[in-house]
Every structure is written in C-alpha cells, then in structure tokens.
Image 1: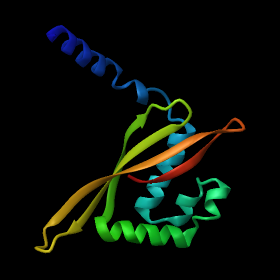
Image 2: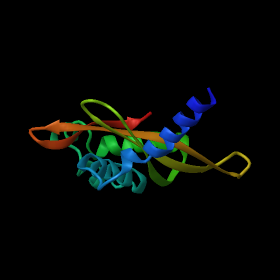
Image 3: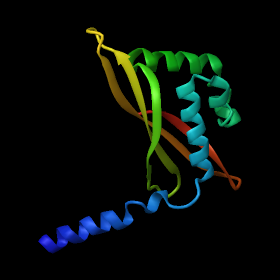
Length: 135
C-alpha cells in the first residue's frame, strides 16, 4: 500500500507540470486578455478577444453591469494568475484565480479569491472562446 501511495505521489509530481509546458496556446492568451480586461475594468480590452456572436450580446453595458455586481460582492480585483488547465476531449478549459480586496466593517482589509473559467474550442481551424464566467 505504501508503494502505491508513493507511486501516485511521484506521478503527481512528474505529471503535475505537464499541462502548462510549452508556449501559451491561443485560448490561453485570449483567456488572459479577458482576465486582464476584467481586472483593469477595460471593457474594450475584454471584448476584443470575444467572438462576434458573443460580443453582440455582451457589450460594454453588460460588461460594466457584470463587473459592478462582482466587485460589489467581492471587492476590487488586485491580481490574477493562471490556476490550471482542465483536461477535456473537445474543449480547452482554463481557470484563473482572481484576487479581490475590500474593507470589512471594522476597517480591516479582507482578501479573497474567485475562480474564473474560460472555455475555448476550434472552429474552422481557429481557436475561439465559447464561454466564460466566474465559478
């Protein structure tokens, strides 16, 4: 049993970095642009990576409204980092941790994180974002 546990641990250490090896893919770059746009509050930067069919329904007004709701509950975004790429046979699923800070009722700074997911896939040989949002 101890050998099995050791083997699983070793496999986790060896394979843990496999998903992030190599140059960033288009879906990862586009996802990072969404995260950066959200954190900075720049609707144009956020929308620039969305496909036209999503951009029609999620413009600057929707961006501002959604961001206001999230920031109203979580605080102001103060940073982000890529968290993980999930395995899926047809889609690329990227997760980011976005850190938020706000003041508590006693004036103390409260920090919390939320996961942001970006799902992308290939259409006509080009990678494009299919969906995004906080989990």
